Image (cartoon, rainbow, N blue to C red; front, side, top):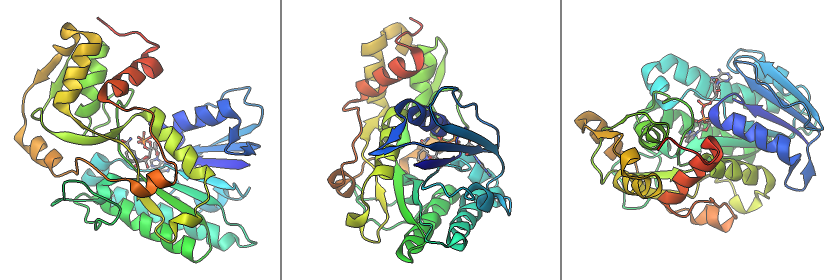
Length: 328
Ligand SMILES: NC(=O)c1ccc[n+]([C@@H]2O[C@H](COP(=O)([O-])OP(=O)(O)OC[C@H]3O[C@@H](n4cnc5c(N)ncnc54)[C@H](O)[C@@H]3O)[C@@H](O)[C@H]2O)c1
């Protein structure tokens, strides 16, 4: 099977590319070719055992989608996106990349004809929902995003459903939880502190906690996010009907629980590197996000995350990113 990853240089794109190169299979299929696209070139590993091509281009450039599907990849992971903070700061760029490029991609697939009908795994987000909320949000909850990024993901979900219904592609939209612990540096998202308060102390650095301890978020680890994407690419989508996007499993975690778990895993001196300084405007923003979800449809289709506790989330970060070590 030929696989194309759009946004392959991003945090999840790199992990997904690494996983596919290690596994050499996707579901029942052997991987024959992997194409990695992003605005910057990505470095594939040398000995994957199949052809790997890296293409650096802007997905929103007029000819980019047609060029990228010229070799007819059967599975396309569409991860390329402008993140929430940037999409809010630059309205035009957010819509160009997060909406227009997706529509162009779907149209290029439609125009290819010849029975070409790839599986598209689109990484949507729980930002498609907006307050006021019920206590838990299920797949029936109305999409009322309160940030442009969420609106853009919601628009793409509708396009994905309609292009699937019309038989042009076979799409699934997975609404990923907030991915925690995000490796690397903070990415400017308002939610970045949920990762910073774990990642920075384990690296021996200070972190700022701008919200009270009872603030909750729906979280999953990067490791689980990759499992969810791979599963979405491998399963029969018939049971979904035309509702092609669905909430993904995760854990509802409060920052107080994160801090307790950090203390018990790494010790009080590591947890003391977090400085509490409540910022009312960040608190108000974050309280507008849904804290917990019902994921019955995803569960019935076999979507699963690895972690079962907030402590697991921290241990997985230590295993996967710090090779078992942290700064005591
Ligand atoms: N990380 C999370 O918490 C989270 C949660 C929900 C959904 N998602 C979604 O999952 C996907 C991957 O997330 P991530 O955390 O790896 O994001 P990321 O920002 O690390 O990666 C996105 C990649 O898209 C690329 N990109 C941006 N504009 C592009 C363009 N015009 N042409 C080509 N490539 C472009 C970027 O260069 C970047 O490498 C995104 O679609 C994101 O919206 C992420």
